[in-house]
Image (cartoon, rainbow, N blue to C red; front, side, top):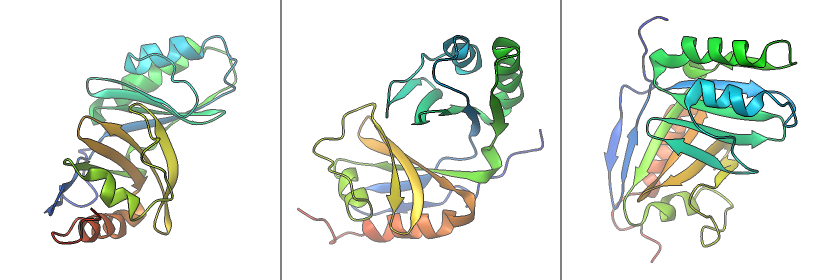
Length: 183
């Protein structure tokens, strides 16, 4: 793999919460039917986590697996771990019908951190944050673009397409400006 480059060179914005780009991260989209027997073993071999339930994410240190749709999982890992993860998926899945693709360079990842982090996302996404549980992955929109996010600690991790990284960062930074708190 070539040397990784983040979408926005580690952009940071501090308002009533902190917004920062945390890329580059390694990401693999894994598609297959959920009832494939080898799937849990493939995910374990690739990122060391269990198989997430519907709309959930399982995080183990710097690796994660998120449920994206009935036949799609997002594997997150250090950037340089992607080739080994792809090899582990291929070996474990064997002849089972599946697709595993490195999407690392097609994504941007941000952290929204602070006690009022959900206020920033509430301005942009049609989500009832009072009902969003820790470990729940929400695939939705951030204003006009597709995004996925989940709560981790006192913040959220947000994944979007790299092509809209500047737009999403600016939305997040504007939503987090001091004085724009919701309550």
